Image (cartoon, rainbow, N blue to C red; front, side, top):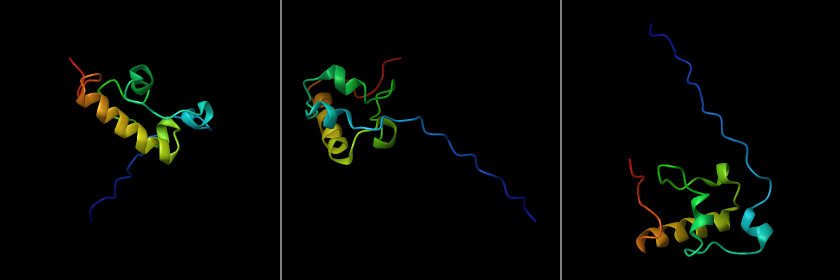
Length: 81
């Protein structure tokens, strides 16, 4: 009989209670590079809504804004080593 191995789950970092964009009453824009960088990891990945604390509507718009900024070379696609 093979032994069953317990899988350890990663703990998710605590998030903000309110959406940043709802609280500030603004929408994500590709021109606000400093704001967009807060929702990306150091390797250039888009952070999920669970970790970032952004509501579903703004998470979709945020992802589109980041992709638009990448296309215009305002943000990198990958981190430089």
